[in-house]
Amino acid sequence: MAAPTKETMINWYRQMVLIRRFEEKCAELYQQGKIGGFLHLYIGQEATGVGIAAALRQNDHAITAYRDHGIALAMGLDVNAVMAEMLGKRTGVSGGKGGSMHLASREKNFWGGHGIVGGHLPLAAGIALKAKYLEEDEVVVAMMGDGATNIGYFHESLNLSAVWGLPVLWLVENNGYGMGTAVDRASGQADLVKKGIGYGLEQDPGFSLSFNGMDVVEVHEAVSKGIEWISRNGRPLFMESRTYRFQGHSMGDPERYRTKDEVARYAEGDPIGVLRNRLIEKHKSVQATLDKIEVEVVDEIAKAVEFAESSPVPTYEDLVSYVYA
Ligand SMILES: Cc1ncc(C[n+]2csc(CCOP(=O)(O)OP(=O)(O)O)c2C)c(N)n1
Ligand SMILES: [Mg+2]
Image (cartoon, rainbow, N blue to C red):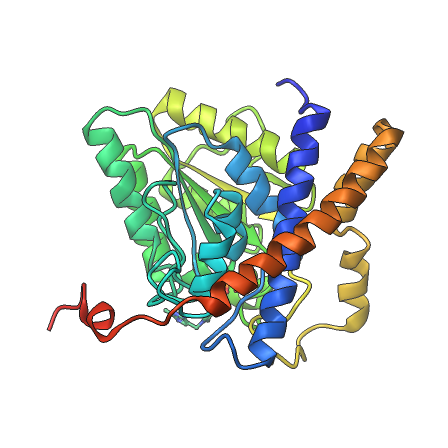
C-alpha cells in the first residue's frame, strides 16, 4: 500500500485539529447551558475517526454510537450544521431534534449517531444486507465501543453477518472503558478481536485485526486493508482500534476508575502530536502550514458557533413532523 502523501497527511491533521477544537468548544457551550442532554467527547480518539473516513471508498458507509461528533466531521458533514445540531437549532443536520448523539447525513452515507449501546449494530447489518441483495460493492464500517461488545445486539449482528456473508467491517474503538468499567472487568474475553472467533469470522486475513488507534496513518492502512478484504471476499471482519479517551465518559464524570497518571501517560501519545511530529520530522518546512491550520480552525469553529447561535429553534410543526402518534 502506498504511503500517504504529505498533502494527505496535512489534510488529516486539519481534520483532527477541527475535531479537537470542536469538542473543546462543545464542552464550553455545555458549561454555559447552551448544549443540553448528554455530551460524549471524542478527544483522544480523533485518529480513529479520521483514519476510517479516509479509508472509505466512494459508496461505503459508516455508522456509530453516541460518541459521534468526530466521525461526523471526518465524514464531511458541514461544521456549521453539526454545531447547530448540538445547540438544537433548526439548521442542524437533524433539524435540531437529535442533538449530540444523533448526527447523521444520508448524502454522506453517515447513518448516525445512536444512543442505545449496540442498538445500531443490527442497523449496520441491514445496510449491508441491502448492498448484498442489490449486488453493490459497498462496505459498512460499524464503529462501536468496547462496552458494546458485551451486549445482545452484538452477538446477533455478528452472527447474522457471518451467516449471510454481509459486507460489514465491525470496528471496536477500544478506549479502555465503558462508562467507567475497565474492559477486563466487563468482558470475559478481554482480547477483543478474539470475540470474532465465536461467529466464525476470519482471524488471519493476512494483516493484523488489531491496530494502534492513536496513529492515523496506521488506522488508515488497517481499515483500508479491511475494506478491501471484505469487498473481495464478501464476508465480514471484526477489527479493533486500540485508543483512549482523554476526557470523562460524558460531562461531569468524576473519573474515579482511573488515575491522573494513566491519563497523562496516554496524553504523551496524543494522536495530533504524533501526526505533527511525524510530519515535521519528514518535512521541516511544514511547521508553518500546521500552525496556520490551527489558526484557521479556531476561526472556523467560531463562525460555526455564530451560525448556530443565530439560527432559529425548531417550530412546533418541526417538532411534530416525522413523529408517529
Ligand atoms: C442498552 C444501553 N445500556 C446502557 C446504556 C448506558 N450507557 C451509555 S454509554 C455506556 C458505556 C458504553 O461504553 P463503550 O461501548 O465502551 O463506549 P464508549 O463510551 O467508551 O465510547 C453505557 C452503559 C445505554 N445507553 N444503552
Ligand atoms: Mg469504551
